[in-house]
Image 1 (cartoon, rainbow, N blue to C red):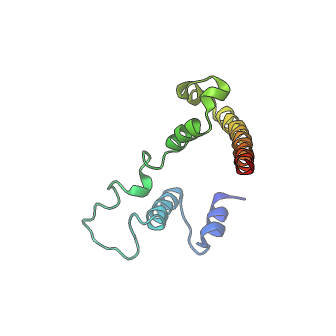
Image 2: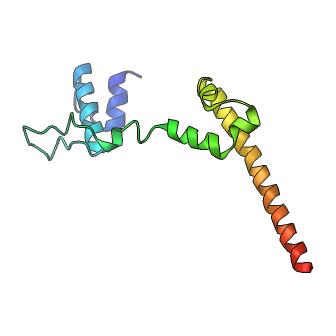
Image 3: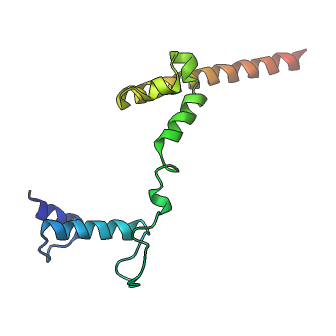
Length: 129
């Protein structure tokens, strides 16, 4: 299937013949509109800076998966389980980091379950005294 047919099918623009630059402009405008950056259809301010302004949905610092990884590293006690620092972990390929995080989650859930069962047993024994 050619790219024109894919674009036509995906965005229902079958009656429009787009060259590559038109398609790129169309996709950029669609992105801006879909993410609430700038509505190219309804907002006609010729002096707007919305298109080039910093927008929260594009803030790679706030929405970076790096911060999630750092929190997961601490919550799942990866350093204790695997003997690596956060920097050593992040230096690994993504598929290895994801596998370490998956394993650490499974291990942490098991530890939490055992701790919860132990606490419940302790509470039951204290009540029997």
